Amino acid sequence: MMVGESGRSRPIWMVSQNAVLSAALAAALTVIGWRAVRVVTELHLMVAGVRAPVDTLILVADPEGRLPDVRSVLGPRADARVVAVATKAALASLADAVERAGVVAVADADQPMTELAHTLDQTLRLPDFAPDRARLTAALRAREDEARRFTALTPRELDVLGALLAGRSAAEIATADVVTLATVRSHIRALMSKLRVSSQLAAVALTHRSCREAPIVERIRQVHQF
Image 1 (tube, one colour):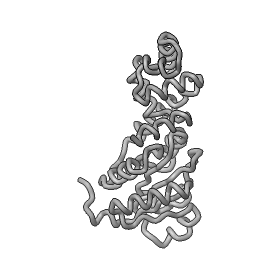
Image 2: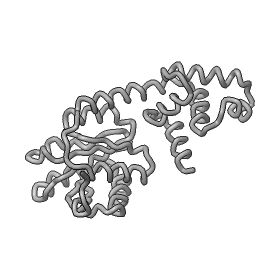
Image 3: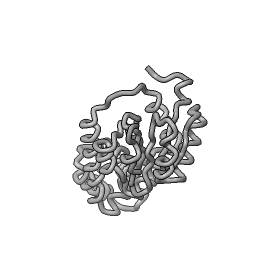
Image 4: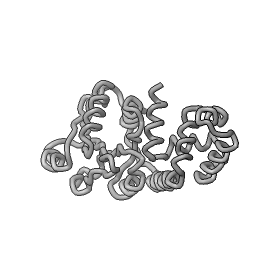
């Protein structure tokens, strides 16, 4: 069962480590219909929150992946639903947050804003639930392992991977880069081996799920714009 329109007026505190992202996300949620989104700092939550109901906390990480530490603030509100918003840079800290700070869901801040707002909307509209934190933690740590695989790719292999993300074939990459098809295929085999996947489609899927290398993240954003 999802919450009705009246449920969208319940208090939501967005605890921010990234003022720009938090402001944009709060505005997007307001447009969708959430009417009680309040963006605060950790200190503000500590001072003002003691006099206000806290139903849901959204923790927004900074660009380096650091999440607000609200464990000391929650106190009697330990049953508040906590959702974390962070880029793939925060996979390890997200796993820790699930274990230690009671996070029940996470949202990928690398998504375009419209998709991120939709993800949060769907999460917030779910009834209260008791997630399998062990499974969520394991999934996040597995994604951290996946993300680290990309650090082994050479700049040229990252270029080829970016071209694959854009839907270009090996032949098209060879023509555009003025190299032989055999050279491109060699790069593709190398990156597939390093990423531990068995196909180009699997490499692309893994990239969308877990890659946080700056050139690739930017390429994904460009692809999403079209």
